[in-house]
Image (cartoon, rainbow, N blue to C red; front, side, top):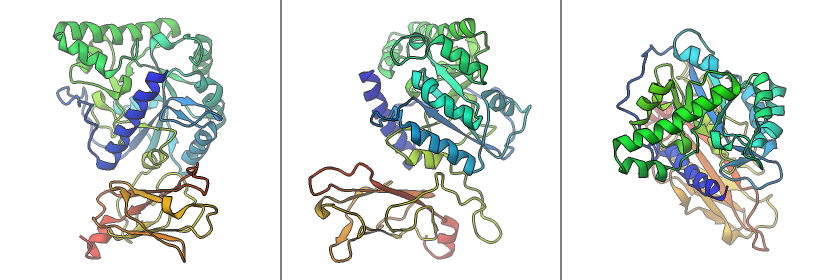
Length: 396
């Protein structure tokens, strides 16, 4: 699994870049040439699709692995925020126009077939009564070690889990590209074997109809959906972040991949920003997971501000045992910034020097202690920018 870990570490970086810049990762080719089967009018509902991999409480968090306790906190946060978790059947019925869903809805997905989905996630999902979907690739089912078994999958299905396809072998992008260079016939044969083989296996082993496919690694090309449509798929999930609308093309459905070492992704995924109300305030000012910080920060965590050139600061006077020379502040869209630390007040500040363009901004501060050890829990928070109010205030 070392190759998977390295690959998904790169994938995490690509997805975070896409979320901050609103530009799809360069490695992903949108399927723009394939039309949506049915174009329905927007009904105002939005679905955020979350993608998870492995869970563990004691192993280090990585791009692929999230701490079990954090997963539980995220499931509780979804309920606190009033977001409705829907099933894959609900999602498909909504997309086809045969069912309505709440304006803020969420679909839970788990890729690959990690055993920890059964041992760690499943008990929590049953506790919250949340439906979920497993995107399995054939060669990993009953693969031993950390892989799900057929019995585990059937038990979860009996409790309401749905199944989707994730290919036969989970080919890396370089493998797919290699077959593309061999010509259209070889590429089509390769993709048909991967897509049809997985679908046939899942339907035979678990007596279900499988009509959705999660692109392995999020890599897809315009050639893939026609092949998938031919073997019976209708819905295709990417790793490009964003909310799903009813009219979103089924060939490139966005999905937020939740990485264990990047908490801001969950915040973005659960932020359903509504239009301004008559009073000028946002109807939904929530920015995802309720935020608390171990020290005072500005703008405050979760605040909505009307300036795109704020002063960002953190009062570190109550933080024990840190080396001021090692403090680093990072701001989404800017990377590491030249923040100033005042030894007398222990206040870390940075004046934003270029107008913030995104509706939310994430900040992270970390440091080393006197022994040279990097803090295990960096200071992280986010705030929102009311761009309409900023414009009215003359901050263009």
